[in-house]
Length: 168
Image 1 (tube, rainbow, N blue to C red):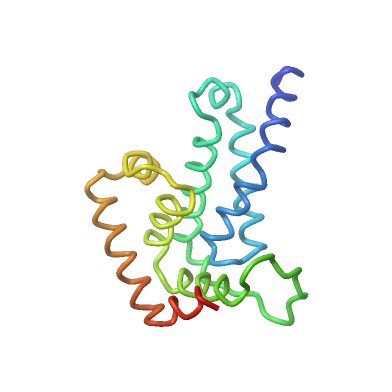
Image 2 (image 1 turned 45 degrees about the horizontal axis):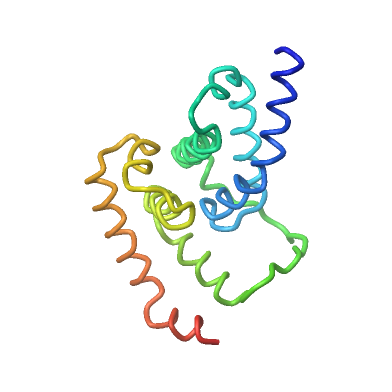
């Protein structure tokens, strides 16, 4: 890779790593280690194809598409169900309402990987139905249906607790 291309990639990776990590955290239901792994894999794939990626209309959207596909590939592997054991170190508390955040992350964790991916793309990343369909390699109608069903499943998991949490 030429020095100029490498510098462009480093600038891009530095600017987008935080947003990719936040999306990966939602996809993994708050697992910071898996989120870091997914971001690393995504950035590695972006680096390998940087000339083609940098010529795309929106490299940031391309990176998020790669992230979702890496996540879905990871979930298909049998080893993805393995959970670490032992004590985990304490993390830094996030700003905002911790109870609401933990409740939503727990509810997302109870959904399937495709449902999580649709909800994160549509409502966290605020992507259109068409963009989400391209990312997930499905039709716009399937995204609408899956979004509706995933929201229904999320409401069923949350029950009546969400309005109470949002008010407090």
